[in-house]
Length: 515
Image (tube, rainbow, N blue to C red; front, side):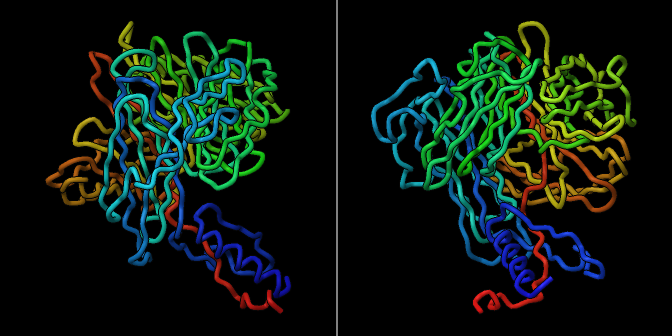
């Protein structure tokens, strides 16, 4: 490898540390240093988060909680802020013009026009290590575009939680605001009459983004020309009603959001007439083995939806990581997923009163798959639903915002080997002293824990999960609330919070590029 190539690699990895969006890995050459020897974990210096518009209900109440963990190696400068995005359709009037409405054909919803981004931030964190909260009510709460740099960037997490007392989608809806990207998979959506599912697209950049929305059902692709080439204007949000993209009415569909140019944040809001609703976050990237953590122990129904991109079929072993070990659900030992088609399997009350996580592994060759489960709690007309997508492991550290003294459950699973993790409760948004506790998760088990609470807590607080030793750990946080006798709840998975990035040590001077 020549000097110029080495310098290019060093320059690219340095850029990754600044943006916090990517890290570069290079195959080791014979005699070269290993990645661990050559790379250092450095705090990211800038990151972005996008929060979808929370609800169209006039009686919705939404809270936002922002939190940045204290991270070693950061300087004393920096800031974070969330601002309202403009709300407009790709084909609607420009931001700042009159209110628009759906054209009834493309599903591009113009909704309420919020105009240009507001000069005053909606939410401004004060310091790392302490949450800051904000709230809104009614149907006019906008999508938010957020940026953080310096000491506020590493691990920045924003939770959006909405309570809807009645109507379609009533219950508790929660979502972690997401980083912009170019590729998203959402298994578990529906276009049936009792569901109203929107995919929310938010563009944080100064140029327009062009997006394709693809739908895959039990028989393959659902053709939809109107889902191609959607334009999301700069600094704006565009909720697209999925049932207007196709005439077919199916439950258990998979949506693929593919960004041709630019980047967006994407999340699906799934609202049901009978069993409430929640946000469906994107599944982890297609992989041969998947973990879906944090199925509540009192789940009365669990429905698995899986999709295999490409032409190859996938055969997967399905097991439940329970508090006592891995269990194979009777009658659901394996699931066959045809290439390019979506498969849905009703697992019933698979947890049987115990904490659980689904672990899916290939029975033979590995074929990439995406998956999610829809979970229902309650019975009869007092049911509430939520979604759990396959997720990445906790990694270096995971962060969960918007926890209270009651109503929060932390679910951790170690599917391969036993693991020890440290869980830290931050200071409260209005007062309280941080506290940490260490837990051991046995191999192949899931443990539901009542998380530690800051001493003298006032307001809400955040949780960080840091593996100390052992195998990979996967996690989820469940929030519960009483809504007129309905067991309202929402679940957010806990992948790595992207607080640090691996930056190989530069052996060469970047000035060689100028010669």
